[in-house]
Length: 384
Length: 249
Image (cartoon, rainbow over all chains, first blue to last red; front, top):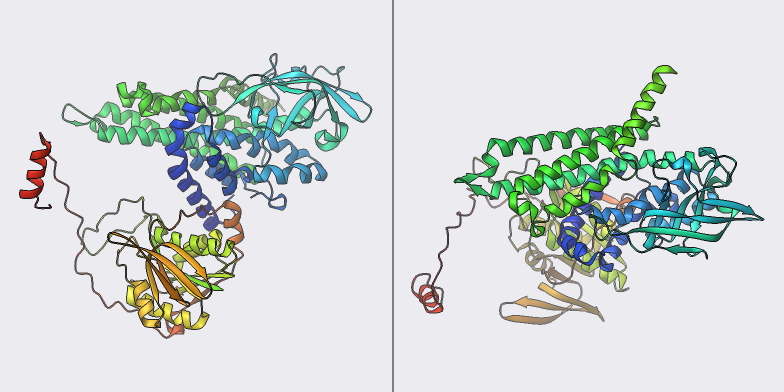
């Protein structure tokens, strides 16, 4: 749902100017330094990118899913590293509070998240549990008015920058499944939290992940999202459903960028006396990429609109995430192929994007997990 | 103190424009439009003056089609307080626009008019000067620095071979050059807030001006394609060619 087309056009104009004038020119330096320079982070805050999904009453923009998807597609025409910095605050790190938090919890955190003063992270994955989220081992034991949290969270995006974590921990040791898990809002300054070393990753240099270790970390019981024990798994699944459409949009944006780069290269590059863009085998790669991006974009925007209309989009969101991320991988591969030898060289940038996008098929549920989600939903619906 | 900032809707500077097949002009169908970059600098300067406490109200104005409201909204997202659209479907030309602006100056009585030195579509570089002439206000063109104090504005101008600083009594007209400032982005929250700021539409007739074009475009052609260059073997050869072939030194 687009609430106001004129305003949306203005949003996208701002984002595309920022991408063109600030982000793309600094991509290489960000990758080299493994950090986004502070002046760019400040501009991201000033433009309002951290507050995209926070409701207007809490100082954000309250974008609909369709609007958020369009902004992501535009933003991700620059390296996905920039999106990563706002991604957890706009998405998985804040959505738990937004969807299931109490009014006090929202008022306490959302205004600071909207301005980018505080960055939110989502702490679900553990060394022993990834997509098998119901087998979480991090424990939260009630002690008076507090919970005492112990456990380790792994690969937590933006943990080194986070001011607050949405943490999934087991509050009921008797319930070994999903029902024993609660979602907590944990201030990153709480004693008992320590961070591991930044992970060395294949790509997305400039975006940071690390372990987050909780040792006798004492959190007030009033920090359970929605003040209800045992609802954490449901919260996490809702958050991830929305996140899957968001990642789909991210994949479309980066794929459009890579195809643009490949197309421009194919027009410039001459072999056998003509542009390689005029060779049919190169054209096949361009055309396949174009059509697949178009398909993914249609899927993302359709799922987004349905979500905005209040439909249950669990299956559609998984379809988007699966198709768009696999599409993005294929487009990356073809783009490198069109660049030929230059595609393998760091100087041309396309190999960096090729490494960056490999993550999309893995995080927030691998392709295989999406397949399971989709098929299970199908079987369940058919046999209900 | 009130500032009037006239702006123009033009083809986005990143668009590679194409001449229409009938050579009547540039093809504008489905082309991305934006605020003229020099106008963005003018808006930014006005906003900075407001942030410094020198200016209390910024009125942004444009003469053009209804679609130019988008650029007025952008200017309000950047910090202008209200906007006026002089709505016309005519092909606007500097003299007509200057006359419309003169009428608005009489109505609004601004202390300062800041506008871009030229628009990147027609590159006329005339409207500011014409407005100054029509209103009798002093003008400081091609500004790279603007300071307002004690009823005067000091303008550092970019001129051939250096800088010239002039001091003008207010009210005055200032046109902005490229190096005056670096405009900010319209932030997304401010774009939302700009929707609630007032935008008035007036017709040229309301202002008592006639915007009928005075200048007729006979033909528009793309620039000649650049010829391939050559490599020279030495500085001597280069100097010789510049002197005797290109005749530029």
